[in-house]
View 1: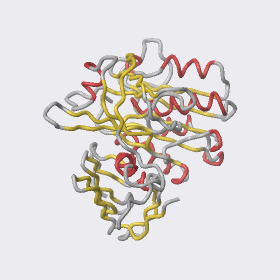
View 2: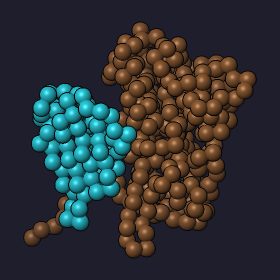
View 3: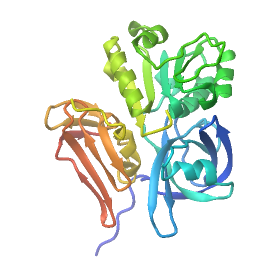
Length: 252
Length: 88
């Protein structure tokens, strides 16, 4: 007689979540604060899947980074508006507090940084690739303030930047944290910093030296990640010290 | 090496589907390519991911290492392209 075996561990399943509030993140993205009832807690850098189901049963799903700090309650997703996309236009322009969708997460242990991993830390973000690093930086602020950390954030223009105030605030109170911006399309008039796409010179100037053995995380659109990761290897950084997370077509 | 496709992602994109099957984190699992022997994390595989599944390819030789399909009959995983899948 067959009896079903008890589950050996926890597999992820979809759950219905409700939007508690939303706020703009720069010009093209939105932060969704979600009310979750069944959430085991997440790690800095993890993501979650969102599934939308139309009235006719058609389903579409996408992955979004969890931007909220792991030690704070709740889950916030950063969603960049992708023109003509199936999911993000709804999430960035139509969804309202109280609306519900399905969520699966938290996901992934590879693109994660915790205080115990140490440093120095070098975080390279392209566009909305900053979202997982916002969670990493808040975790670091709480549990590992002294870890030398440099963030290189490539974004089209100041208006496209996400979490700019929050990230700058973290850095102003912490000499071990340096934020380097590069504006790839339009920089402010008086801007004296980088105003071009990321290249080998910029990486060499901003990253800790290879012999400092930094832990490197790169997140952004696929072409950005490919370029940054391969250039860092050419500059002498060990491939196994570089963790990458790519996402699909974006506004960048 | 073939040309880069902006729609190409990495193994992280298949992680949600894999987490609905495996209890251990699949993104950190090491995949040894059956074609070239390259050893890389599942998250580092090149990926074409769709709602209903994903095709993962070796980051070194681009041969297919893992295919995943989610159907109404369950989740199918074809790992013929991997010599070893090492969960850590």
